[in-house]
Amino acid sequence: MKKLQILGTGCSKCEKLAEATEEAARNLGIDYEIEKVSEVQKIIEFGVMTTPALAVDGEVKVTGKVPSVEEIEKMIS
Image (cartoon, rainbow, N blue to C red; front, side):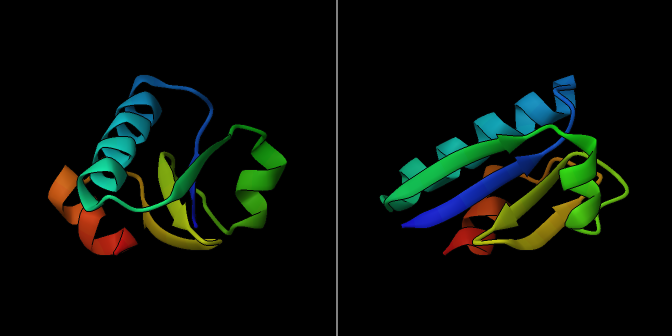
């Protein structure tokens, strides 16, 4: 099971990233769990300074932007 983490404080870009990530995971047909990490200290522990960010299995894949669903599919497959 893939652990997909959306790092951000709940802004509109964070919500868009969460929706796009969920769509990408569904398109791939994988088992996944989405966790929204909104606590600033935890976001900093990932080394992220610009949100939103996406981490896959604990590894940060993108920060500061909302990639396309197709780009996210490549990151999580």
